[in-house]
Length: 303
Image 1: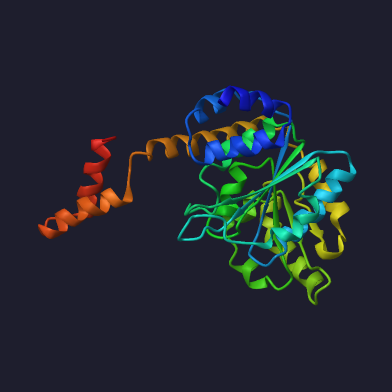
Image 2: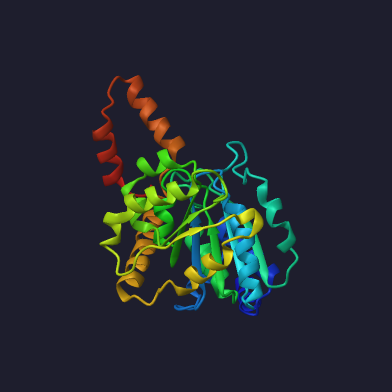
């Protein structure tokens, strides 16, 4: 089954791509063989779009799709949404903003739920991204939830990380995680027609000044009004001009992915329900120590 899917995937069949993603999401039979068959190197660029909720990420992505299509590129978009606590499906319905692209032959859009992942990314986002790259797309855009650690985690996946903010986010800049400062390759100040946008950008530059010393080039800060498609051409050029031909960054990215995947595999045998049952038994006997319990589980390994 997976062999035929893989053959169709390499031909750019979007139905095969959708089925391959489902195969990986559900960890169905043959998904590991499929992944091992993927080429070791693919030319597709991965663009991570992250930032706080309400920054206009979906509208910005919609406008970016148009910019890539105008230049003759094929684009895939993976939208990572919060999960419903009941069925673990994607919760947001704002993909209607991209509805104009759903039937375009050179655009593929898929919403993915975080499925409870603490970092705010889909637990199989790395594998899904590589499968999408194998389908022959030039660019893969990943839009994150913008909560938890997803802003930092996306840097371990994307070739270029775009952090989107709005002029009202002054407090967010002040309390911004140092890691977010480090991972941004491009900053976008969206909704730049709002009052205080220029002052916000000046403040952002001041906050970023120490980070500039750690980069060979200054991190671009792009003003956009995504709803009017203003500034999108500048963002497109900044993405195009961002260099990914860096051996150190490439090996760092691969190490981050390998670490994540190994951790996922080693944690497979651990069930929260089973942990709760064992803890309950020990608590009932008034014989529970958290650290002794963890040590016991670590030493026990798979059951």
